[in-house]
Image 1 (cartoon, rainbow, N blue to C red):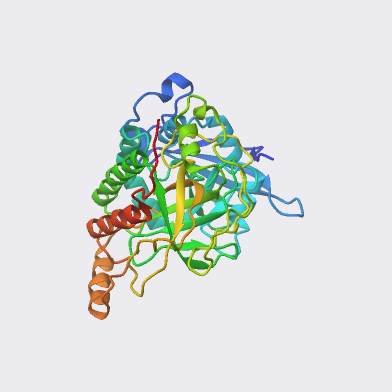
Image 2 (image 1 turned 90 degrees about the vertical axis):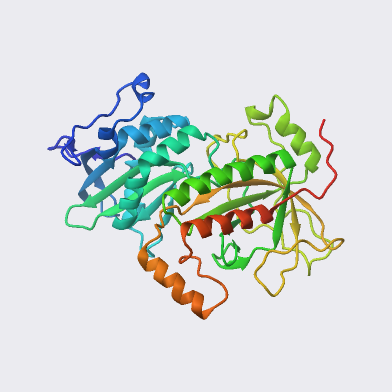
Length: 399
């Protein structure tokens, strides 16, 4: 249920810094390039809503930042502005934000799985606003970017309560298919799988992609990492979801290249557990941990990082944290679809992090993830992803 404007108050524009708000009213206006004013404007609306079981109504001050800019970003991904606004300004959204007892920073909307709410700090908000103009141009230039897609920046404050700052991003794992497992891939020192209980486990898989697809991914990854490096961002990660399927890898590739692929045709059959490996002691367990499916049929399958056919191959980890190749003859490849994108891009490198890096480097041979400078982190991150997305070791003859 949507919250309504306060019965005795009307929407109030708030300016930052004392500049007129410019929000387009029609589709044609949204195609215009945002001005400096668009990047600095804010608009405040007072909402009247009940989020507790007693039905007590509370006044909420809702502030939108750079609304015209984000409206364009929504248009890039064919997100309807009115649907987005209705989805955000709902009782369920406010209840989620202000009933967050565990201080979770990533929140899934119960009524709309297209979006993820990321609660951010005041300093992260400053980093984001400073980065936004160049981010906008990057996303516009590279339509296949792997960077997290941002759809809004908002601050909500209940009367007499604390502000909650949050950004809205695309749900990378949102899919019509079941996401059986998901992984977090970082530059250093290791990547891990998050199981159903929320525990981290080492990632013991490589993903073999069709060579042209792998080349496109690594090229786009280079562009995205160059952007993050120039913005002074570090400690980001690749969120990767895996759907296990039974269709042969070659058939999945042919479906992806077929004319009907972009219409939403499935390229593999649902599998709750996935194929079993012949050597369970050597292979990563591919049984189902997650039970994630989407209630929205919005999959854009010709998009980089969305439903990409691959072969998942398990391998043994060596004593070092270096990703090793799989042991020939000891693994059973599993056909999978991959969903992935770069997340956590608001960690700005600072003098404090530089000092932290120097001190930790004196104590260990392995540099701290958070302390590595943007250039070093970018290099390690690209190397790590290129190893996980291995060159194809299988004979695939495309028509």
